[in-house]
Image (cartoon, rainbow, N blue to C red; front, side, top):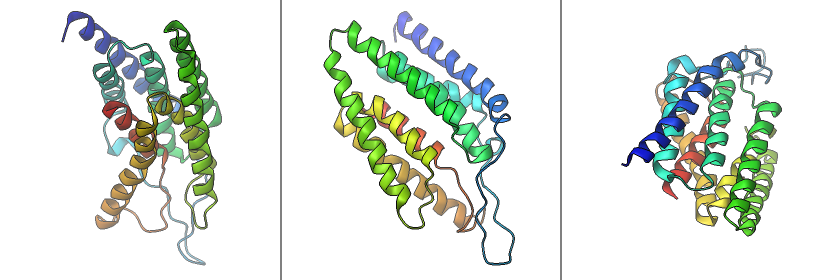
Length: 226
């Protein structure tokens, strides 16, 4: 790895660390608002599961996420877009874990920063046509998740739908195989996590679980593998 590459990864990791430092403070501004799902009639509702304190510290997550993107993608024009979406994503993951919410202001910030950075990248590279698959990826992700959210007994909320649309922008930019992988991986990851938690008796079948972290992790892995 050259000195320039090391500098790029270091700068990206620093951005991730800042996002991780800010995440708990931002999360405290969004108290839980999602209704808890009752287990049986007349019994207490099951609590949400998953607190950031039980996993890696947000700062470490931010460093790995943003540093990993810079190491995998290198100095390509779209890297700022990936990093901006990832940095906001670190904050969104912590908020969703603590309050089962994906607040519109944060999802909107990811959409605005990512969309603007991709537009700048396309114009700077002289390839404005690359914005078309990015927008198509966002639209397709939105439509697919709307259908999933409307299915009977679906656990997806419309915050998940909006976040999926935002993540469809960078995934679509990288092409259809990356988009499909980014749409599939969250469900595989979430399914494995739920099975592991059930086996460990950490949750019940009616326990409310956040899906935002799985969405973000799946998209991140898809970008790394592109």
